[in-house]
Image (tube, rainbow, N blue to C red; front, side):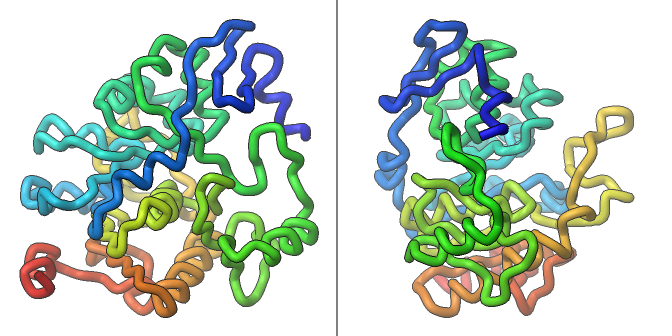
Length: 291
């Protein structure tokens, strides 16, 4: 339970989803189940790799669910985007890009934040939480007020739950590599916020997920389209690519082979190989070809 020291004594979450800050009820979390009311067959996840600058986002089909992650909100004004859902799980993004966080919450999007990020919002501007649609999206093995399991116990627990898919060959990153069909109990981090958004889109009921701007490029180059000069924030893509990111997408690829759920990577230069998640070089051609 040591992770709970990050929350106390200022922050509490009650079982009825009330958010308590310094002893006062400041807002309430939305019930995660209501996200299923947003169900659409197709979903577009807007990530923040440099390749996003080469895509005309105005041409995304209007009948698709539009899902943003982290700094994708910077594209909203340019393309008149209205995000249906938004996922932020990176604490550094809250700390260093709070102006964007404010815009995300006030945009009206359904915001899926990790519990600790909800606490960080309280620190910066607690009034925001009552102005947005906030849902809790925890990591499976770092849930609020739940003990963190050692990897052996986690594997045994997860193996008994049909909603949790583990890799065929477990690794030392077992509690971070897998796929959760039920985000109400948490997600596998996957080493990238996009992976959490994919699990959430599955839960909502989308049958096809198209990912834009998921380059997963080297941090020796510009990691995000909105990072410039001194404003560049550290990225952990290189650190986690081989141990967490690629193994996670392999679990997803196996799921897609066995269920009516398809995921396409619309970044041709993405580090993730085509034999794991299919790449589509021209998403407009792809949409026209498949209807």
